[in-house]
Amino acid sequence: MKSERKRVLFVLPSLAGGGAERAVVLLLRHMNRARFDLHLALVEATGPYLSELPNDLAVHDLKTRRVRYSGLGLVRLIWKLRPHVVISSLPELNMATALGKAFMPRGTRLLLVEQIAVGAHLTDSRKHPGIWRWLYRHLYARADQVICVADYVLADLEERCGIPRQKLLRIYNPVDVERVRRLAEDPCHASSVSHPHFVAVGRLVAQKGIDILLRAMAGVRARIPSAELTLVGEGPLKSELEEQVQQLGLSRGIHFAGFQSNPYPYIKRADVFVLSSRYEGLPLALLEALAVGTPVVATDCPGGVREVLADCPMGWLAPPLDPAQLAEAMISAWHFSLKVRAQAEGVEKVLGRFRVEQIAREYESVISSTCSATRSTGQVDGLSLRAR
Image (cartoon, rainbow, N blue to C red; front, top):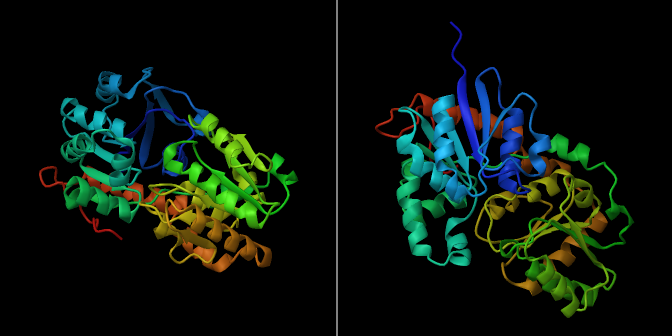
């Protein structure tokens, strides 16, 4: 007898240009339709990744501008769809969804995906971190499982927020290596930039440390006057960063490229990709840079960066919040790029842990196991919850 397809509802605030949104879109493109009936609920159906959703996906627009007002609409949708599993990503939406779990149909399983190093995030960006830790502890405990995108994130949730270990498991964010490599062949303005050429991709927000990168770039330019930097992304700090560029005397050779739906040609045509973040979860742009063969420099910040680059022949780690050390790493990586563009065997081994085909199968396994789990214990049958 043919087994019933499991109905799965993914939930996101929108499809804005962030790593969490890209990760969900990739999963939705690659999960097995024969086993799963896939749906996506958006608090607001906006964002550049809408066009990348698969055609067979059912998309539900809650038509709410703020996550805090989406709870009632989401619960109504869940009663209408009766999904076996709800999967929510991003902290505020996770908490709102967990809060509404008591009002969902009995037997609805809830998986929350944590995309960030929580301890650093609360310290850096929240006014009342103690209250937020309390919310994490009590609301995340309502989930059947909490998926963490890196071992660091898993340990951080357990130690900083007191999430029970049996609730936690690690599944990395996915990268679609072949698609990234194909899209990287498209033309872009970066092809006319001189060398050495550095690139950074991400939202212009404090977390991404672009202010640190600009100070590092001043150090690089003091030794390599022709060095240039392209920043791919938009965000609320753009005007402030443009002013910093002027103050540092870096007007020539700093390019604000804005948001690009296809950033991969910029990454491939650069000599070095730089991630200057103050904290991370598991940065997709870092994996995508490796996929197109560009050497990478990243700050050894809280999060999963070290897990990616620990054994990578094309990766350099620099201490966080240290522009001078970041500049040294950038120069070292550039010298490396002059000698060899890629170390294929070592990089392919690194990427193997993050390929979307592998990650989609891991999600499918967790969904299936969660559906058959014993609700009272929260244990997932046949799945090790240890950090791997």
